[in-house]
Amino acid sequence: MTAPSSGQKYSGGAPEARGAEPPSALTPLRCGLIGENIGRSRLALALAIMAEDHGGRLEFTPIDTADDPSFDFDATVARLMAEGWTGVTVTHPWKTHAAAWAGAAMVPEAQGLGASNTLTFHPVTGHNTDHAGFLAAWPAILERPPGRVAVAGAGGVARAIVPALITLGATEVSVWDLNPDAATELAARTGARAVAADAAQAVTRAADGLVNCTPRGMAPDTGSAFPADWIGGQSWAFDAVYTPTETPFLRTARAAGLAVMTGFDLFRYMAMASFAAYTGIRPDPATTLPKLDALKPE
Image (cartoon, rainbow, N blue to C red; front, side, top):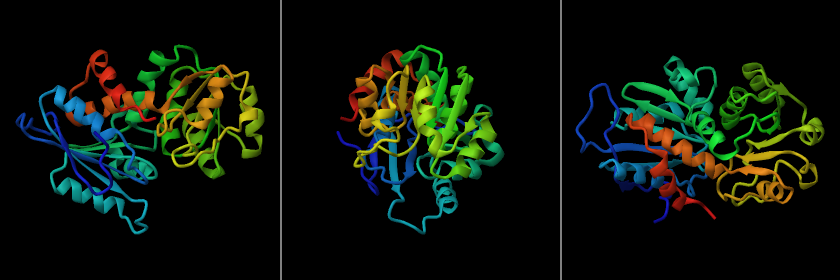
């Protein structure tokens, strides 16, 4: 089974759609994914697995905006809601737009993040299942205090990961971005420390943990936000990219002896949190995670 490409619908099992009044069990979960270059996403397959487990069905439509410079996010989301969708998942570069669209309707735990990756429509609610997923994945995968953390990238996923690291007890989080204003804004929002890109090497060498929140290493790109000679002596590494699972950054980190949490590790927990946001049903990790493992990209 392969992930649907842009413009194609995927139909599989799905649970009750979320709404002010519970619909019948036969009501499909109608959702999709908005983002750039999303053809390798495993989200539709993950949601279908969980839907089937709960006796329902899924209608999933990807909306790839990579070749659409005139794409209107607000108008598209309004149309999807009018068409009766349960909601829509959002990825790069639309997560800050999604949070702005949701406004005051963000769930309490995602308020203040400035990014949303899941919108549900009945009622209108903004979620950040990257944030929830990271908090759930951390103790299961890395099982250690974050310590001092160096974060490359200050975009939508960083707005979820940086606050999660602080919640987990990181003693210092330093972040840089090719857009210095983005790093400064994220630091002001979260209490992290914005550093200039030319200070990144020194910050990396002094860190306990390394985090990639940039698109570097996402196929077909073969680069890394952390040059190989910066890596060594740290304790752990996390890459938000999950296609491929073993990015150049994580391969280098493993070779240097760092413990690793992959973007696919986050994806599994994010997918479960997204399913819960859409349906109100919380999947059992003990039975769901092994099934999601089958979706692991090479």
